[in-house]
Length: 399
Image (cartoon, rainbow, N blue to C red; front, side, top):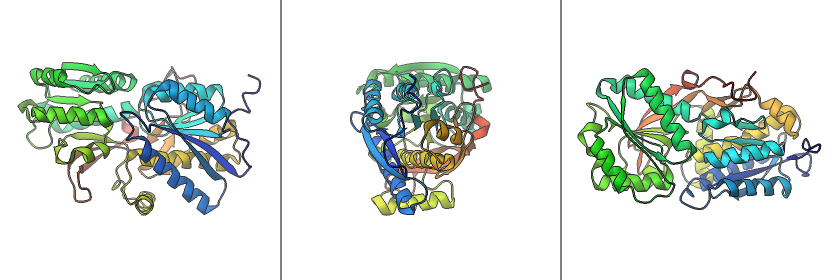
């Protein structure tokens, strides 16, 4: 333990930052990993071409969306590859496990996981969550529903994945709805990852006739659920229709664009949370990022790509600011740091290392000219500070 201050700092040359990027490249959520990698690779390329401050070397690994595998990959990156930092970690259980392991090795982790745990009892000094969490997004979506359709909403139903993110996202959404609008939970269920058959759940939702259907399913699971729901016209049921607007289907996950791209016009015109959307905000940073990404990969960037891009850039900027690759120095430099990301300004809150976004991005799905599939026909940004949860006393970093 006396050597822990040296662990997590590479034996690479003094001018190179070695960063491990752990993504999901296999299994039912394998659509998440490639865009994360593309974004990270683009950031490294631009950093190295600029030749200012540290250069960057990336090592990519596959978590398989499995916490044990993710920790094994992190151990390899730290103990064999001697990385200075780790980024990535799109799934909550894996991120929590890797955060604990990185803390034990005094290695910086910059990640995005929706789980609230990294802001509470599982917070670690070496971990920065550089984006909004599920509570921020859940509150923003609830605010939109209440503000625009409150008179039409009395009951809600939910189908969510049976793991940390699914339970927390449903709890936060329902509790916030209940605090600010009188609603009743008509039906709720939690399904195993990669379930494949949702016919029983779809029938139960139909029988409950909710005014709002909320789901935290994502990637392949969400695609399968929507396809099966469409086969029985679930989203056409009368209770889910509004007088003016989309069906009352609230997708509380970053499902753009892999889900609508797979479904095309079969994507329901519902409300959706997006960690990133290429046309918002209209800033020089975002516009340059989009054009660079399109030039490099001949495709439009999505949320996981922007995460990979900014996580690598944040590590680099932290090291440049600290004038050091040492974990303790970079952590000190990143506390309270404001970063101009493609999706707007992100402040890394000093108290618990939670990223406070300038805006959380919500929107209505529908046909848009820039895509061959559904996009956000209307972007509905919500100020991040207005929905951010204050630092929790459960976090050991909070005074």
